[in-house]
Every structure is written in structure tokens, then in C-alpha cells.
Length: 271
Length: 188
Image 1 (tube, helix red, strand yellow):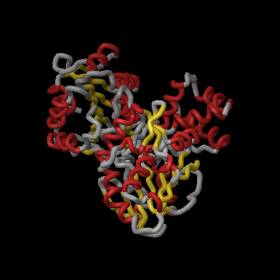
Image 2 (cartoon, rainbow over the protein chains, first blue to last red):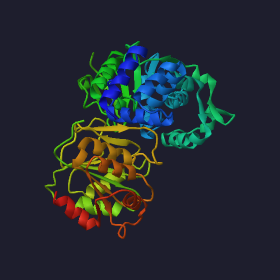
Image 3 (tube, rainbow over the protein chains, first blue to last red):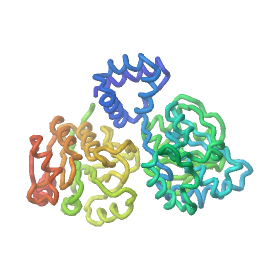
Image 4 (cartoon, rainbow over the protein chains, first blue to last red):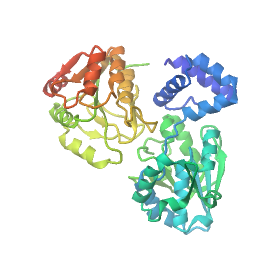
């Protein structure tokens, strides 16, 4: 794909719908566009622009497919055992705990956190925020129902992460889906939030943003990390993807490493 | 897109590629000064052991890079388990958790494709033994960019589906035994 065509698409998306993809990591973004053109049998970028102008349904579909939404519960189990054993017990000393899942996708990570907090007896004092760019994805996350075929991996991860209950007890099985216990979901506020263009909105004790910033270029990653630093209380925690690092980030000095392997940081300086 | 004047090596492999790969990594000259990218099918959640074993064979420093890592020439970069790895034209690595491609993550096609884009006619791609067709389209992208393509000798390869499919469908430049691949690389 030619750079000019991508620029054309980006300026269309920005001007018409205020979606700014110009600082997305170019390699994967380009592949996502190619993939979308093939998926919906669209010939080229100008045809894509016509397609996106035609209806909101098309636009929502594009945003859902262009963003990467592969996820699983308790993904990277060691991260979750570290949260269980090292991070959440520290936060448990607080009266109230606020947690932000930035880029929550279809909600697997939120579900994991709810289960973990429930097991630790901490849920009642927690308030979770789950945000995403895609309204479609937020709707999925809100529904909190999970396909049977994915549950085997989710269950396996749960036990690897130190879970010791019957995993199925957290769900109601009906119509081929596992529905997360409704009483857990009530602790979550779902909100559409664009990490690229929307401002920080409140302060948190823990932010999880795993495998989201890998789709941004370095400049945009800096912008987002700055936003996180404004959204964290002093001594609050930030968890990023296992193969992401703050080393390459402008604001690295604001954070100290709590768990190198699992990429959990603590904010110890004011932004 | 800008391409480098220097060359780069990308190696794809699946079932049966472990042995030839270890031979290649241990056979390179210690002053080998090109980046080597590895996209290999491997077991999910088996993270640590694999890199350690490859390190014990590799003459050059080898690592599983973080996203946005700036690599140097003479480094071996292994696509991390459960991530796709892209090589960018500014000598950085991008990782992605996009869906499986050909049932695989890392996808050999994605990495080879990105090397074709970044290095154009200076890209050298090697496809070793494997039981599926991942990497075959990547080889086509290398040929389209004017780069060099090598598949493991079909008599030597333990499982020939991967190198064989590439060889049958595209004008692959060389079909070489492991020893010949090592000689070829050391002469670059």
C-alpha cells in the first residue's frame, strides 16, 4: 500500500469522524487496512472512503476490525499472579481502589480482574473503569459473555495464575455462552474513551493497558504514557504488555519498576 | 519507503527447523555484521527455554525484542512467543497480537514481508523445514522486492511442505543444504 493513500484515509477519518490514526504503528496499521479491504471485498482506499461515508454501521465495523481485539482471560498468567500476590495486597491498604482498563477490548481482562478481586475479598471497595475506542467492543465487554470454545484456554490461564476455585462458578452457562456473574459486572463503569484524542478523566490506583500501545508509534506512546501519569495517584501502579517497555519512552523517569518480568511499574514522581 | 544499502537476513522455520537453525546460528562468523530475524513456530507459553537453547548455539547476541526496540547489525532477533514481529525501515521492531495467521503467531509471512518492505532488494530470506505453508507468501514478497530467496535443500529438510511449496510456486534463487547456507551467509 502506498503511503499517500494511507494519508488520504487518515485525513478523511480525522476530519469527518475525529478518529486519528496518523500515529498508529505503520506496519501493523497497514496490514490491518489490507486485511479489511480483503475481508469486506473493497478494491481500494477511495472505495473504502465511500463505504465508510455510506453508514455509521460500516464505520463501526471498520473501527472494530482495524483495532486489534485478540485477548484472553488471565493472559500471561504470571502477570496475574503478580497482581494477586504483589500489587493488590498493597492496594488493599487503601479505603477505596480505582482501576482503569484502558483499551478493554471485549472485556476478558476486566472479567479476570473482577474474579481476582472477588477471590481476594476486595471487590466491594473497588471501582473499575473499562474504556475502549470501539463502541462495538464496549458493548461486547458490557455483555460479558464468552464463547465456549475460548473457555478452555481461559480456564487453563486462571489456574496457572493461581486461581483455586471452580472457574465455572463465576459464570452462568446458557445459549452456548458463559455469562459472567452479573453481580460482578456491576462494579464496572464502561465508557467510550479514545486514548489518542480524549483527555485524562480521573485518578486511579492501578491502570492496565496491555498490548494496546504496541499499535501506536513512539510519539503517540509518549502522549499516552503522559496521560497515564496524570491519571495515577502517587505510588499507583501501571501494568503494560509483557513485551512492551517504558525504556523507550520519554517519561520513563516518572516510573520505577516493580516487576520487570511482568512489566508492572509504580509512579513515584509527580508528572 | 526508504530501504537500506546494507543487507538483512530473515529465517523462517517450523517443524524440523530446529536442528538446521542451530547449525546456522553456530556456524556464522563471529564478525558477521548483518541483522538476522527469526520467525519460528513454537509452542505457546513456552517462553524461556527456547531462547536459552538458541543462545547456547548462537555466535551472535540473540534476544526476543521488546516492541519499539532499536536493533543493531550483527544481532539476532527472535520473534517472541505469541506475538507477530514486524521489522521497520527505521531499524526498529514492532510487535503485534493480531489474530493467528495460518494458525500461527508469530507468523513467518508477516516477518518476511516486513523485511522485504524495509530492505527491498537487500533482503535475504531463508525458509527451512516445516509442515505448513506459512512463509511461502513472504518469499514471494522478497522476490517481488528484488531480494534473494533460499530454501533448505528438499532432500535434507526433515519436512518439505514449507520449503517445497515455495520452491514449486516461485522462482526461488537457491536450494541449499545447511552447510551451504552457512557458507553463503559468511560470504556476504
